[in-house]
Image (cartoon, rainbow, N blue to C red; front, top):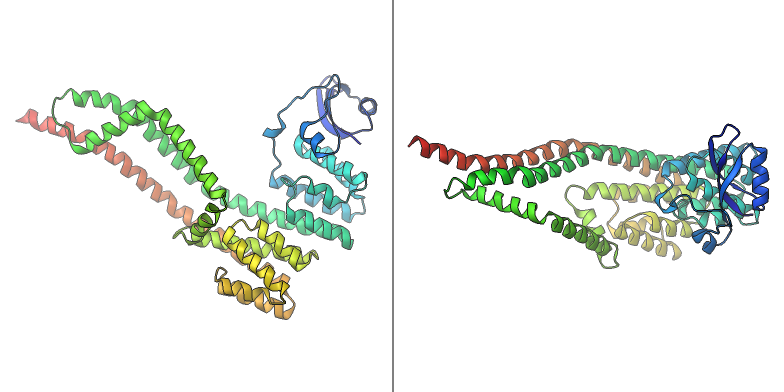
Length: 415
């Protein structure tokens, strides 16, 4: 069944828009007419990747928005997952639940994706396979857990666990983001102030100092040189900076650069321990969730390797998966790598021996997520005064460089 993104006018003359599925444009028009909406524009999308990517515009329809500028937030996924858990637990069919949730969404992209998922399920596809076609919204963890829930008949329980995991990710990401907002704002303002002074203030003062006809102190000459470079070549500096960032990101994503960068991130004096704690928490939370949903251990470790976000830790997980294939415990492989803290390895080993691996992993995840949050708070508390001191040193140097020649001129006048 095609999916239509439409625009029209309701009975009060106000604009109305949305995404619904219908058998044909005629059926779309009749359905909207029953709801009191006069159809003015529509875009029809049919199944298949080629059609979804390009879309099929019917006669009289036109594209009304740039979909590549839209995105689905993790918080929206968490809210939809919680609603799916509630509706499925109440005995509502999956297609009806998806349709009901999709109608109330405000994000047109997410609404369109859910409409496609509903259509695919109605045509006979499993819910997991329908979601798998949208990897930017539904991760491997999400899809595999849904597949496990469908096969075991516990889809409501799986959605409940997915909602808990997704909401926990949202809370952690929100805390990390909010903790870094103030330092980021201060850093941006500092660069802006220095740039404005270099471009507009220092050149005017330079004319006054050069008219003195005296040899300027070394700090003053250095400041004038930097000011001239920034004033005359600021556009080139921005281009070089953009190129440098692009080259760095390309190297960081390459096969040779990513392991080196991820290793450096784990050993960096200030942020290395935080990166490791976040990686351990992600490993423990994801593996615990997958095992609780009934995903086989080998499949679960493969998924964890892809979502852990660090090539070094991902390699350790790969080694653990190979060890499990050979009948060895996960804890032994983690211990040999020396990348996971001894306490984590010990708790996982105890969990494997006692048959409570899921609970042990959950405890590890809770502990390390809390430690990461506390560490971010402490780092933020240290960064704020440090940035103020650094900004003060830069401004102080500029003031000294300007005042020194003026003091020399004042002393010469007294003589």
